[in-house]
Image (cartoon, rainbow, N blue to C red; front, side):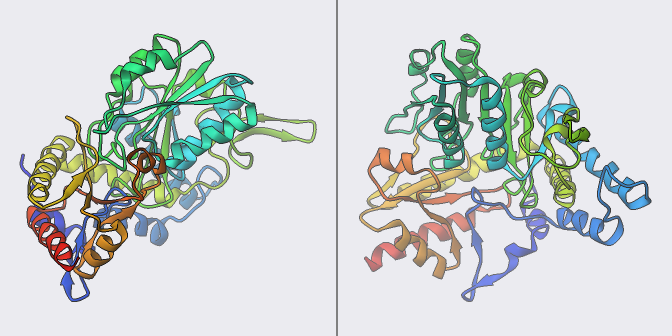
Length: 405
């Protein structure tokens, strides 16, 4: 099956608008993807038809919402090939999922003098929660470096792992460089020392098949809004044997079994980690996004996006004094670059006036920019609804900005 991009684009009416009198070209998909009509309809159906608080009521709308909400847990289970539905926990997104693990896993397993291992290319959301944990527990944060091509130095991992290492947290795909990390190899290294692994799949979940059973990861996190779903929703996958030993992240309704002033007992998985009224409308929207991706087929997505990425790199490579950041054998979704001495903010501002949306700055990955000694990059990021003509216009626009300088 080949993708009918013209039909696909009709599912995203926002792509048809004009900005500054020019057809809008959206190349900031790594920050947030656009949302297809079926997702908007699914969420609208909740508000118009069965807007009831799930898990709590005995009436029709509450029961209907509960059923639809829990259907999505089953969809996520199948989408990521989780062993059980109880290992799928709904959160507000990748950031909350990582913070949940950093707090709850940290409370259960991390003590003074212990170590957490992360990579130099992580998004801030996979750095700061571990720093907070280490500060709280008087533990130590250790860093896996990468080279000037963006390749993670996995050969240094065995020496960084020790008897005090309690967890390794690493991104599957760098949001700043598009580098695809060899996470199966990393997981094998960590597990050989009995170290659990958390995978940040925020930039991977919509670009490749993420199979947690095959990968063998202990935790995996992602956000809905980067995979054509709504904002304010995401997932944490965690192995049951670990989640059972971790204390709740937040207290409130739903996460309890019994409350009294003499003490409280907690609910079973996954509800132990889903305190309060959930983002049920957004969860149902996430389910519709999964349906949409399944309908297109992840293999078709992979093939077209790789074609787009190769085409973009070829076109942009012809620009004088362009410098790419992230030049490894395996790349996904992102081209990060600078041109001459043009500041990335200047490039981004001029491209915007030409109707082209890219991201500029440090991309919430300041250690990456520090590695290269730069203030930031221009990042063009692609989705399956992008087309080669948009890449041609990006290339021409970058050349035009160059001529201005």
